[in-house]
Image 1 (cartoon, helix red, strand yellow):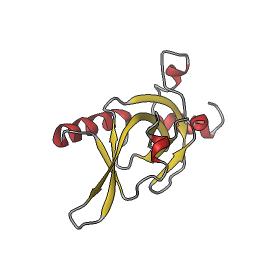
Image 2 (cartoon, rainbow, N blue to C red):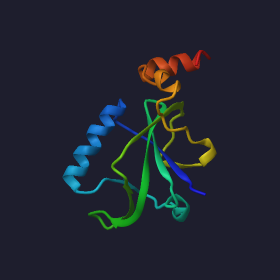
Image 3 (tube, helix red, strand yellow):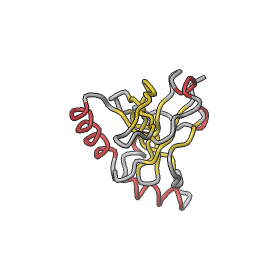
Image 4 (cartoon, one colour):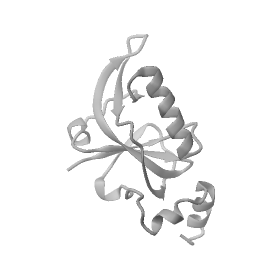
Length: 140
C-alpha cells in the first residue's frame, strides 16, 4: 500500500502560484524536484504509488506523485535527498493542517481526495482564507 508525504509550501500563497513556481523550476533545472535535508526511511512505500501533498496557507490543496528519491550532496558536501516529482499537480479537497517543520508521512486513509467534477469542487473554489474561516466556525 502506498504511503504519502505532506509538506508545507512555504512562500507560496495560492495553488496557481505553486503551478507557476514549479514550471519555472522545471524549465530551469530540467527536472522537477524538491530538496530535503533528510531521506525518507520508508522510501519503498513512498515510491509504490505515493504522492507529496502540499499545504498552502494552512490547507492541503494539491498533490503530486513521487517518482524517485535521489541522493545528492550540496556544495558543502552535506547529504540531502531530492524528491523527484511528477510535473502534474492534482488539486485535492481542501483540508486544514497545522504548521510543522520538514515533512511528515501521511497514511492513505488520511489523505484528502482528489478534486474532480463533484459537488465538493464548488466549495473548494472559494478563497482559501474564507474556506479556512468557515471551517473554523464549523460551517463547512
